[in-house]
Structures are given as C-alpha cells and as structure tokens.
Amino acid sequence: MSKAYLVFDDGAIFEGESWAAHGETFGEAVFSTGMTGYQETLTDPSYHKQIVIMTAPHIGNTGVNADDMESTKIWVAGFVVRNPSPRVSNWRSENSLESALIEAGVVGIQGVDTRAITRHLRERGSMRVGIFSGNSHTRDEMVVRVRATSQMTGAFLASEVTTAQLYVVSPPLGVATKFRVAAIDLGIKNATPRSMSERGMEVTVYPLGTSAEQIKATHPDGLFISNGPGDPATMTQVVDLVRDFLIEEIPVFGICFGHQILGRALGFETYKLPFGHRGINQPVKNMQSGRVEITAHNHGFAVEAPLDTNFRTVFGAGFVSHICLNDGVVEGLELLERPAFSVQYHPESAAGPHDAVYLFDHFAEMMSKSRSSRGTHA
Image (cartoon, rainbow, N blue to C red; front, side, top):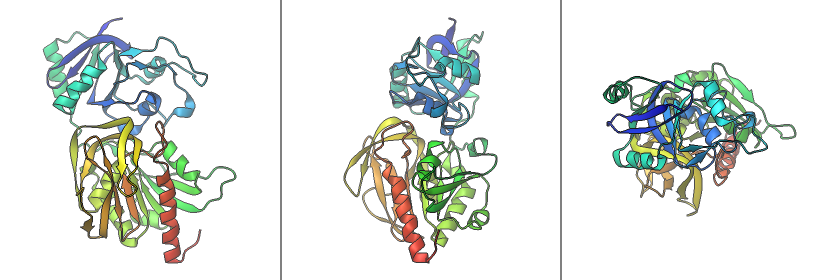
C-alpha cells in the first residue's frame, strides 16, 4: 500500500495508507459517530461535497447490498477509516465496501486515528480537508490546494442532488391510500417516502424548482420538505414556497434541511454549527413528553430560535418541540395556529434507532385534522 495524507486547511496533516480509489479529493471534513450504518451514510445525498470520518475504528464488516442504498449512488467526496475490515461477514452482503468505493471512484484513506481527528475537529471547528494518495505534492502544496477549495457556508448544493423529474411512491400492496403528499427533493433518502407510504401516504416527489402553483394544482393533503446538503440561507425559493403553503394552511413537515427551511420561513435565522451532528446515537429531548429519544442526525447548520419560551411569528404562535441534549441546539419546531412542524433529524431510521418514527404518524394526524376542518376528502 502507498502512503496517503489527510490534510486540513489549518495545516494539520495525518499520514495513513491509501484505500479505496486512489487520487485526491476535497470537501468539508465531518465525523459520524455511528458504529453501524456506513452504507446509508455513504448513499445519503446530504453528504454531497463532504469527506466523512468514521469515529468507530472497525468499518466494513457487513459489506454493502442493494437494499440498503438510500439513493442511486455514493455521494460522499471521500471516506476516512481507521481499520477497514479485511473480509465481509454478513448474509445480506453483495459486495465489499472497498470494492463499492472503488467502483464509485471515491478516494479513501485508512490507518489514521479517526478519534484523534474527531477531537481535532471538535476543538478547531469545521474545516475544509483533502485526501491525497499516489501524488508528488509537498506538504505545503497540499495545504495550499485544500485552502483553495470552497467552504460549505454559502453553498447551494440542492440543485446537484435533486431528482431530474417527479416520481410517485405509492402505498404497498394491501395498504389503502389515505393521503396525498407532495415532497420537495433537496436530497431525499429512499427510506423517507417509503416510511410515509407504509402509513397510507401516496408521495409525489418533486424536483427543486417546482413552483407552489404546480404543486397546489394537484391538491395535496400535505407538503414535505426533505433533507439535503448545503447552506439553508441559499434556499430562498423553497422558503417562499413553504410560506405559500403556510398561508394556505396546508400541513407542512420538514426534516433536517427541511427543518432549517421551515425555520427561515417562520422568520428565524440559521447558523453554522462548530462541527455539526452526525451519527445514529444523538440524544434529543421531546419538550412535550419529557422523553429522551436516540436519533439519527446529519446536519451542520441549525435554527436560531428561543429555547425557553414559546415564540410568535407572522403565522401565529409556536414552540420549540425538541432540543439536543449534547449542546442545547434546537432540534424541532411546531406551530400552534397552523399545521406545520419540523425536526432536525431523520425519523425514517435508515440507518438508526426507531425512536422517532412516530413523527410520520403525527404528520398523518395533522393532515387528517386539516382535511376535516376544510371539509375535503381523499
């Protein structure tokens, strides 16, 4: 194996060995604290333009398979592991992790202390990073090349991951259609419309750029705003679309990026977190029930909303429904006078715990109440 280097824009360099595809790649350095779920992470479009560092030391044990793909491809810009598994041991495996990364052209590095790298990011904050293997650059040249790359703040990336054309996910055989949901694809995962369809929702997934008028012409029961990559401050068209639906009092549900977009539609600002939340073991407190939910996260921005009081917006009163117990970040919003709510994590549980799947039922209840108040039918 040849040497490889993980190079940060603050000048820090970690030396390891080349793994997966060879070459060089750049992106925002992020760490994921999940011990499992690496395939779902790799194929989540929210990780577009990011180099993922896995804090768990042993990655690749279960290989990869077609069923666990969350999109049509691997989206990460690079992959960093300490000890990749030398063999695959799982009955569902169809390919090894390294082979899948090589086929996708994803540059990786192994043999580095990923927990030390995680501590470095926690102390210094989010940074640009590059992986270099099989190159002749000097250390100074590698740092210069990393510093020449763009940052995530101000990045408009949803247009690079959205679907090219709309498609429909219908309820499975034996499940009656109860609601019609319009979903805006900003980087949606396969498991999300599937989770809604299992609850009797026919989900029409629309590409970014679809107008509110086009969607409302189909008379949906609710609007869903998906997860996705980039800076929510750049999503002015979708923010305006959400406001249009709030005015019409059509139920709105947002997750992750969609949570941040709903927050901006309500008049709140968003901000870049020092190092973000990523992994399937993030503790969140439900402020209504008092219960602690273990949840799956992938976000580097957050909504600046008041934590200790209810708030008022142009759409009426609302409240913070969930907070992160690690750092007090707002993880959920809900309006009291309009049918709208959001969470900054992934209730579809792919991968991850199932503590938050009730949120899809909450969306169904909200659409049912809205339909009754408007006197409409499926």
